[in-house]
Image (cartoon, rainbow, N blue to C red; front, side, top):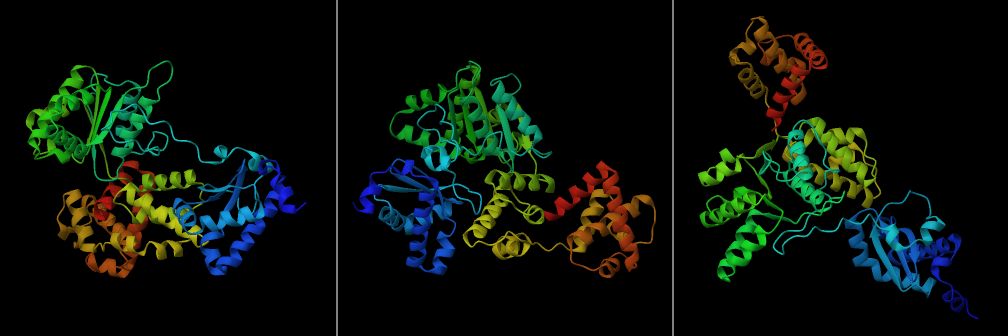
Amino acid sequence: MRDGDALSRISPARQDEVGLNEQWARVRARLQAEVGEVEYRTWLKQVALAGVAGDEVTVILPTRFLRDWVNKEYGELITAFWQAENPAIRNVEIRTGTQTRGTAPSLAEASAPVQALAPAAAPAQPARPDSAAPLDQRFTFDTFVVGKPNEFAYACARRVAEAPATPGFNPLFLYGGVGLGKTHLMHAIAWELSNRGNGRAPASVAYMSAEKFMYRFINALRSQSTLEFKNELRSVDVLMIDDLQFLIGKDNTQEEFFHTFNALVDAGKQIVISADKSPSDLSGLEDRLRTRLGCGMVADLHATTFELRYSILEAKAQRAGVEVPAKVLEFLARKITTNNRELEGALNRLVAHANLFNRPLTMETAHEVLHDVLRAHDRKISIQEIQKKVSEHYNIRVSEMSSARRARNIARPRQIAMYLAKQLTSKSLPDIGRHFGDRDHTTVMHAVNRVTELIAQDVAFAEDVDLLRRTLES
């Protein structure tokens, strides 16, 4: 009997760990010989065996990008080599996942159903109208990082998720700049309401952008199906409209939204809205709509602090199972201050590059991989600009920065300006001193040390200095 015939009668799921790993080792060796050392090291070295189920083998890669590339370019080759090793194998599934470096899958892992090897399944999409957008499984309350800039909005979102249509919280209006977490909180509310337990029935949730609301309304007008459109949206338990500012200048759509809004609120249904500005600042919306939007709970998400950005990066790295040096996280949190999406995108890019090319996550790698992103954020801050901002903040004249006056209300802002000049510019201590009335570098050093001490001792003072820093960096 031929070896292949004997092997084909044995289910892969029942092969012992040694036999399975030996087959995988031979497949890897054939891949390396086929594609060459450089190509193998770049794309295939990180392919790891996860296990088998019936006639299907599962291999894993650490990133979706790498998974998609290997599946497209090498999927058929990997399958062919596996089938040559074991004719019982009919399919090779390539998925994302992690495995401890240098270890083989255990026998339990190798014999387990493939479903157990995949990432945790996403919760089922909630009941929703056909016109509503799907929800992002990543955007839950568990993955939302809370800090001072967003804690009030988070608390309001939690309250709505626990008790929708509560007086004072309907509508809930979330506003803030791009990438600060508005959409994340809206999706988190929707997931919570659609997966309620303790005997409470899941809520019917309709989440969509204001742009999609407008296009659905226009299509309903064209197809003479406005009644179906109205009934569809007014039958839900929760209506969520993202980026409401898009409706500015669209009078007919505003009119329809106003009536939908009133119908749902009157029926005791929950409304959640997001926009880039507060209702009172959304010039271009009808006054009656602005008034209605502001009659519930209005919560803003402020620009992130360094501490919050660091926490977001740290949490994302932990969820991805990636160890990122603290210095790299701190560097990214200080350099990329605009919004969370760009911050997370930079981390994803850095981690993907390190995985693809098997490089350590170092400061050197960060500078090399993110050079274009960092250049865009590397705005030059001048000492004159620092002096102007600090003077405005403490209501003193800019000329006082260079004067000889030592009154406390002058000297302390001057010291803060020196401290910020040292932190935010590349100027030397003597250079900074020259901008402050030709003061000696030891005076600047004393100012920096004194402000550092006060930041550690006085929380209010530290927040004041941090506010100035963020204002200058924005």
